[in-house]
Length: 418
Ligand SMILES: [Zn+2]
Image 1 (cartoon, helix red, strand yellow):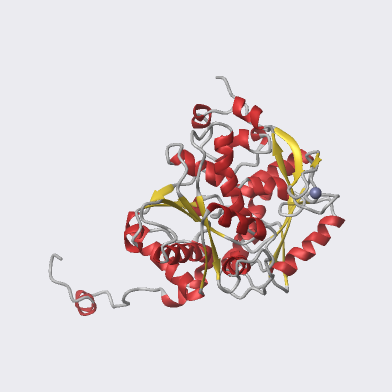
Image 2: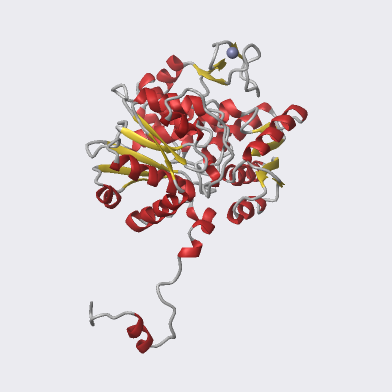
C-alpha cells in the first residue's frame, strides 16, 4: 500500500508585527519588536501536496490535515484528536428564530475539549525539538490535555493551574500522574510565573515557547467544519474568547483553505466572539469601539475563559470587526441557561464555556446580528462533566419515590397508555 506523507511545508517563523523571519525553533517573540511570532508556510508547496481526495483518504483525526500543520504527521503524539461531529441543530435553531445552525461538538476529543488539538500539535513539535518535559499554564482544559498527551508520549510534565479550579478539572489532570502545581492566584498570575519558568528550564511550555506551533492546532476546527459542510465555508461562526487565539485561528483556517485551493470561493465568514460578563475585556473594547484591551480581574463561573489579560485579544477584536461579526458578554445566569438550553434542545452537555457560547448565540440572534438566512456554526469547546458545579445545585431527579406503583402515580398524574 502506498502511504502518502503529510507536511510540514514551513518556511520558518514570522513576526506578526514587523514581518521579520526566524528559523523554526522553540521561540515565540520577535527580538526586534517583541511582537508575537507565527508559523510561515510555503503555500505553493501545500497546494501541490494536498487535495480533497488525499484528505478524505487520511486518518479520522486532525492529522488528515497534516499538510497544513507545522509538524511531521507521521511522528505525531496522537490520542485520536479531531474530526469531531458537526451536528445539525434544528431544535435549537427554531427556538432562537434562526435557520441553519450547526454545532461543532469538540466535547468528543480524548480529554473532552478542543485543547487536545493544540496540545497534540505542540507536543509533536516538542518531540521533534528533542524536549523531555512538557509544561503549561492552564485554566483547566489545557491542563487535562497536556497531562494526558505527555503521559502518552512518555514525557514528564509540569502543569500550572489556579488553585480554585473546578474539581472535575483537577482530578482529570492529576490522574495522569504528571506534576500538577496549584497556584494561589488567578490565571494571569499563573501565566506570569510560567513565563519566568520558561526562561529558566528547557521545557516545552506549550502556550509559551511552543505557542506559535500550538496555536496552529486550532485551525483544524475550521478545516473540519468546511470539509463536513461539503467543502464550503459557513456564513457566520460563534467562538468563545479566552486568549483570543482560537477565534483568530478559526478565521485564518478558512482563509488558508481557499489559499491552497481546497475552497473554490473566497470565504466571507462573519466571526462573532463570546465572553462571560465577569471576564469580558475584548467584548468591552468592542462595545466601547476602542482598540485598547484593558486587563480585568476575572470573576465568573466560566473559568476556562477567565483570562483577564488576553494575549491575542486585539487580534480577536480585529477579526470580529473586519469580518462584520459581533460580540456579547453574558451573565453567569445566562451561562447556566445556555448550558440547559443546549442540553434540552440538542442532547449535548457542554461546560460553562459552551454556556457562554450558546448564550451569545441567543443574544446575537435576538439583536439581529446573527440572521435566519445565515448558515451558522457554533463551537462547543468542552464537556459539561468538567464543570458539574455550575448546574449541580439546580439539577436532580424529577421525583424521588418509594418503589411502588402508587407512589409513581401520586408523583406523576398520567393517563394510562399516555
Ligand atoms: Zn517584530
